[in-house]
Amino acid sequence: MIAGLLHPGEMGAALGRLLRENGHDVVWASDGRSSETRRRADDAHLRDVGTAAELARASGVVLSVCPPHAAEEVAASVAGYDGIFVDANAVSPETVRAVAAAASAARFVDGGIVGSPPVARGATRLYLSGPGAADIADLFAGTLVDARVLSDEIGAASAMKMIYAAWTKGTAALVLAIRAAARAHGLEDALLEEWRGSLPELLERSDAAARSAGRKGWRWDCEMEEIAATFAAAGLPDGFHRAAAEVFRRSPRLDDASVDEVLEALATRPALR
Image 1 (cartoon, helix red, strand yellow):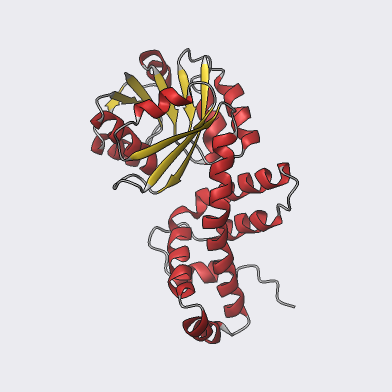
Image 2 (cartoon, one colour):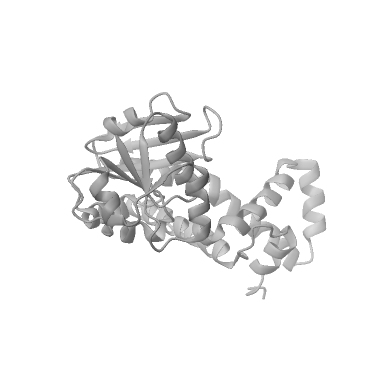
């Protein structure tokens, strides 16, 4: 099987490497991509076929693993593909149905990735739904990725991803906002002292959230909006995650951002009265 990968970010390159190690030829398209993307693809030993059109022509299955705001555009780059198109992006069920329309592929599989890029067994789950989901699960059989078929319904895997990330990333935004509010009121030291006694896990949690916001906040803000849309579609309040999106939008885009840099960025538009 030849699998095409659009476009190898950190997670996508890791999945491509696993598929290659599982005996599949994995190709990618370098046209218009950055030197950083090329480095990841080279490190994963993916085969470059140049363009998205050539990737679609060569591949029996195409996987899209990209930032959520780009999912529909990436699908449109191979519109009319005659194989199985897998959208494994952090988008709402409504958005993934729009992605399916943009891809207009012969078969479309909805995917949702939970966990970190696979480096150890049990760290990464790939939830799948829609026609052909079982075929994609078979591609990953025996790898570090635990591929789980949820249903034949497009949207189920995306909903699973959104509901899971609503907690993991939503609470990261919440703890950052709480610490920033304490700083704005001149109470950060007092809050940290209280946490040490009553909720010690929040000290490391807030530091880790700041580091993640610096590295990934540029992508997580859109993911929070997709989660909000998922909640709204279920008739639930969506304000929690729209606020989380704003927290991540304010975060500095620095891989090595310090806690102070993140907290100061969150307070650029203080609402104290």
